[in-house]
Length: 166
Image (cartoon, rainbow, N blue to C red; front, side, top):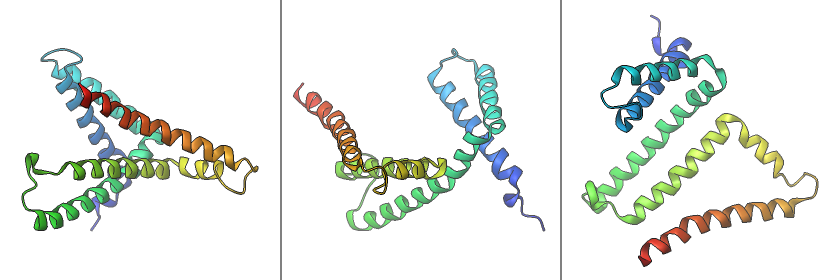
């Protein structure tokens, strides 16, 4: 008996096409960028974007590579939420503590960045660029990383101070 889920047409063509088609169509419907009650036009644009995705190998491979990792991340969060729910009680609606939202937001962002770097191959390039065995400019690399993190911290926490003072 043939397993349809192991077929490369299914996993590398059909599922990525359907995912992108549905997401683009939903975004166009919700945002009404192309006009009110224009479902046919939204569907045509989503169809073209989906077909372009499966026609170009690079982006398709990234999406095919990211989706299993997304499923793993969601499963880990689900297990944590179930276990935390046993201890803390109701986590529906606005009962989720602020620290948990911030923590999961940061972890989700870091997880997504790591997966994209791994799947796209950029992680190896960055590791080579920042490697200690390089040209001896390690301090410049450390300074660059510190500046990037400093700019990110300023952007994140600098804007929140302004919001609270209003």
